[in-house]
Image (cartoon, rainbow, N blue to C red; front, side, top):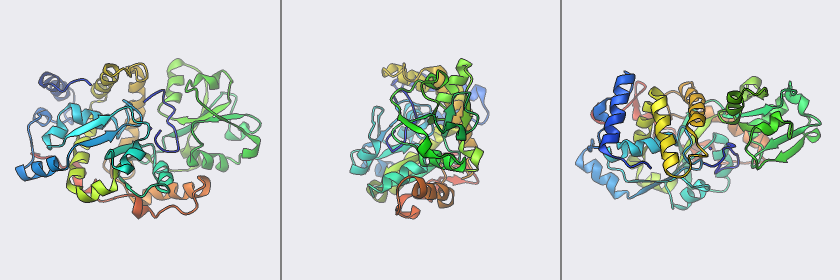
Length: 371
């Protein structure tokens, strides 16, 4: 939630699509939520014209790389569910999912895959310095997913001076901005590169704090009833972004309508997962278990993760899920330059497509064939 310069702090990141499974989910959704997609929308029958169907088939197999395995996160959960529920089939899309990809950006940039998701706009901006063949097409929230969680004795970030601060891969630009806003002298903080994702190392005092992912490690500590302190970017009036979908730029140029339909199908699944959280968590957790990742993604952890991250999607300042604007990326663009060691990043317009996903909505409603 990592393929870019930051880490979600996750331990490691199918069930066959059969008619009975689809019908069962349809019944559950119809019974539990009036806002959920209708039963006939879950059918695997083709819903687009013959010409559009041929166009999507001609684009070939679309490979999506999940850098976080079967994590219950936007830009991932919805891709898995779109495939399992037949949404891709309904739009004549042939989709293959690589759930073990730790190098999604490299695979997509080289054309070996077409889609992957990253944790924030900062990840996209930092990576853009090394690759010009990636385009961000969706951003799922305007809440930064990162936090600094600490031993309960740490009452303010300033207290980290003379103590140990852990991080994964590197310290995210927004975390650096938090430390700066708190007046922390970083020269007085011992930085520790972490390889252990166990959050209790903080409560046990092995390190004093960690730059982590707010929907994961802190939620685990809460579930365990352990006391700790947590600091979020919003505490310092810092605004970030949550999860970004990227596509191979050449593929986007050659198959724009197909890319739009891929996003349409995933956003349809996201719509369902916002309406029926428990159902989607159950399905993605079963997928993880069926593919030998159940230990890394137990259902109770998935429920905690999606419980938090779904709220970030709903609260997005961008508008409808997935819609993005240059204005909303601007804060992170400036943070990356100030704290990420990147002096001259490409212009935002070169990194993102703000029109594609926006065009899939009318009056805030996702456009779906037959509706």
